[in-house]
Image (cartoon, rainbow, N blue to C red; front, side):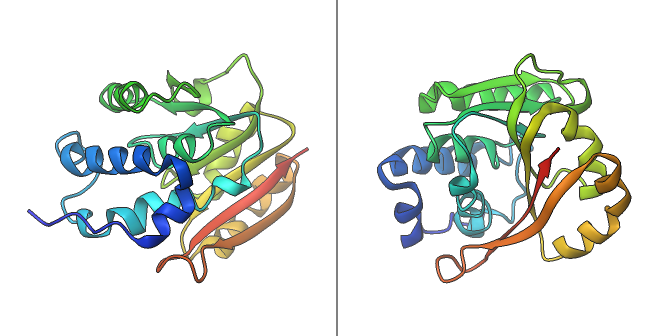
Length: 208
């Protein structure tokens, strides 16, 4: 079994006074993630850098309000962001029963009273509260995420999707969906340069 990556110095910078919760979540993911089918066996040596900090870098982009995390899975980014931003309410949307159980467990063990876990597919989520923003990570291509998530967001709300190095190409491929669903100010943000070894790329767009 590979060893868990040592905590990078930047973790305490990104989480501040909430670092102990981030440590507890990372330790739980390291201990149970493979068993629960949440992460692969090769992820432990890069769990902090590639997964936890990758998500934490997005925290400053969030507005006080209600943020939905579609396909929340292991809690990346939903649980990480809920730790980093206690002033924001999160709805973690996940269809798989086992992953919902994991998210509920983390919510309880970490004392995250700003988290609600909803077992549903994005297209069936139909929350009674219009979301201010929606996040997603490693769920689907941008062009496929747009029709799934735009109906969940209030006018003027934002899509904030964590993406890889191919983000600009994903925007190009989504041109038709962008027009159809009235997105504006579609951009790629590169976060974490000089802070972490692997930057985070985010596609951000406003819903009209």
